[in-house]
Image 1 (cartoon, one colour):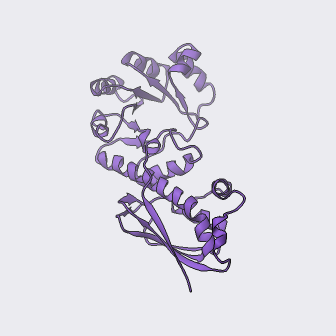
Image 2 (cartoon, one colour):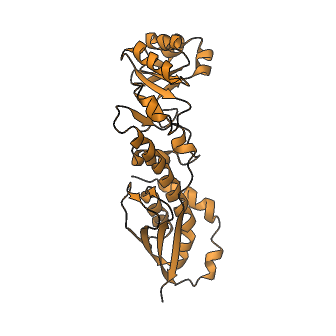
Image 3 (cartoon, rainbow, N blue to C red):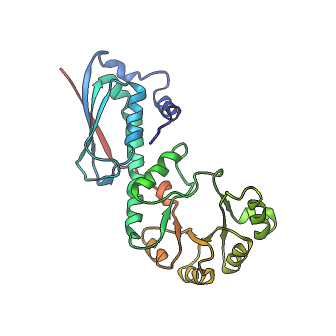
Length: 275
């Protein structure tokens, strides 16, 4: 995974600013080792970002990973060991751990959803409901956990929602204007009932999102569609409902909770000075 240096620079500047004052209490030439331990079960994710923090801060820091990216790890496991200048280890600790704990949390949630529908022909997708500044990283973590990505942003796909339809005049007008932008741009329409579903299909949408449909309405939509377009369910999806939704026969299920409701994995970094 290619990490942009500007991305890491911004994250380090947020924490370090004009300089790490506390690290100055440590002798400038002191060397240390450190290890990162997880206090809970998780899917490990974020190694490229963790590494990039220390690469940019101080290339003299060496990191050895003891678990693979995307691996299931258990509470108490040592994830990696570090060695290098003590000041650099202390200064980079929080930024690196923030990234690792957040991306591991995202991958862990994604893994649970992926397992819930693993035997069914459906893809669980993320949304644009990501932590500001971490969209690319979180979408990587979603894939690491076994789910798939929706569009990255407003620039790589067209999703026509209720307000767009109102502004354009109708579903047909909105889809027509969207297609005029370019044949290679996928067009999806979010609908609230079966009548709108038919309108979207007739208008030439490539994908239709069934917004807040009940299970029976989803089944009716699948039957009505007859395979003409790809159907996606959005709204009110959680681990308790995702399998039942998948069993209705829809093609995709988008879940904002993959990225917006994550609780950071509890990680700890312990440093030991070398004599």
